[in-house]
Length: 164
Length: 227
Image 1 (cartoon, each protein chain N blue to C red):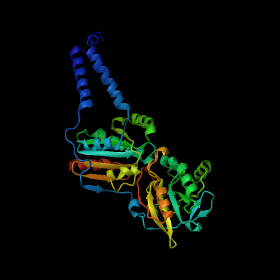
Image 2: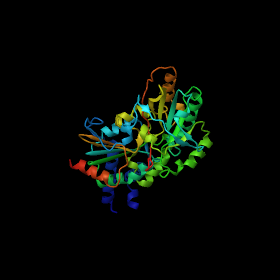
Image 3: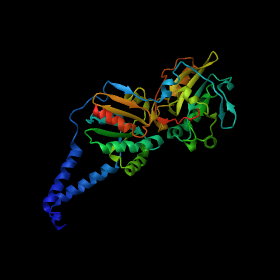
Image 4: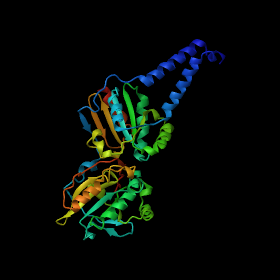
């Protein structure tokens, strides 16, 4: 401890590192649709999973563990997981608490774009707007699912897409 | 921990931080490539009604225990059929606006008919008893029907709330509008487009509906296994 006190810079780095780590684990970004488009288009992973969910959506919460399992299994270069919450913006604290508890904060953003009709078709014209809904994006294609994934269905599908 | 290790740790953290804050992918690709497979879509969406289709009548149990059909409303010019429920936050956000729609349009010939399509086994809050309770609390002025016959599936309701505006034409109920109530679920003060009101206003003046379909985020419907 005596030694480290001689290096104020190191203290600074450690402190900043701790703060940025904690901030990553807890804060939920509230974004507009343009920012979501940017997040998706800048993803360089082989498979980008974009899941639309909300804390009030029971089937959504039931499938979240399977998303987490997949993101833990692969490196970012292979799989990028984006969990897009459609909770109302005023409920961001509830989203934050849930995400922290489930250890998924670094994948979660809250999309605050209340004129739903203006952007649902941009995700997929077949989407009714019901949750959950998921897009699997590869470098060459896109699959859209308006449903809850059961068992290891999603894991198998992602595995297949990675091997293509 | 010796000085060297500490320095390495410090540098690693510094690099990681810089990376986190400043690294952005250099290559940008278009948001969604052309190839598009839609798989295992909610079947009701494709099987349901489109604007212009004839909507079926039904006989469903109201919260007062009586059966209600569209045919019971002989003086109506049409209907604002709303698939909604108790548990869904979007349904809750719209309760007062649905009451207001009925207050404004029932006397003009377009009463609200609310239908709960959810399986109460999936959502206790959507049980018949709780429907009665909620209707009393919020002062629903319109029928609030329990869908035990898969009418929601027949219409193509995909979420709650999901509105179907019908107009009586030659003894048939023709679908004129399908979609959201307005463009701001979470904040009634933020509404700029009142989709259902515009549709009904046009129908009352014998004009075509301008915005015939809209989409909105909503709660997926848990259909009863027996319907």
